[in-house]
Amino acid sequence: MTILELLLDYLPERYVDAIVNNMNDRSSLFNEASSFSAELMTLFDWHESREGYEFWDEVLECVLTNHKLPTIPITIEYSPSTTIVTKNFIYVMNAEDTKLNLAFDFNRNTLINMNEAKKEKIFAFLN
Image 1 (cartoon, rainbow, N blue to C red):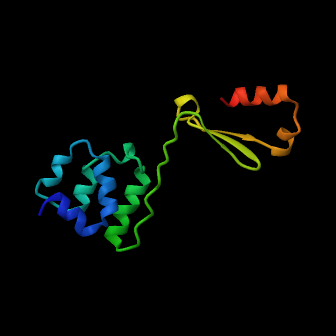
Image 2: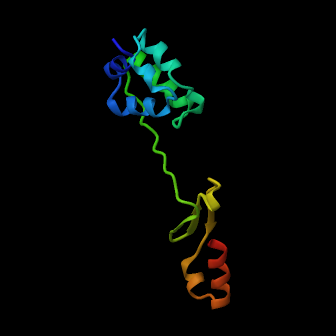
Image 3: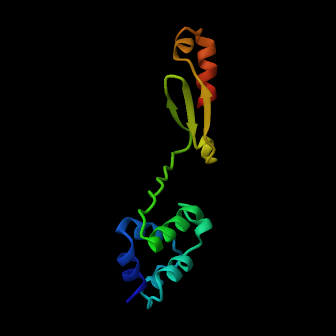
């Protein structure tokens, strides 16, 4: 049995996809498998994975104890300086392509009633 077949025996396909997406050398998936635990722990660095060490540790524990698997975390990648305006906040996601996310208190009525010069300064800052 290959490593890929072993993984698919124990995990739903979306979890196997997450494993594959974290691997540097995917060709090893076609090697002969030993045990599920050994393979999962050595296929990629859990600390460097998109999901994090705690997630993969929980996956392994759930498989070994036959418990419900944890939900795969969703990763959202924003274009540089994506701005989201809500009723009470302005969020600038991935500010200037730094992966830094900012949140500012915001009151829409205050902005609407503000003079044009102040509005221009705020909009210039957000851009």
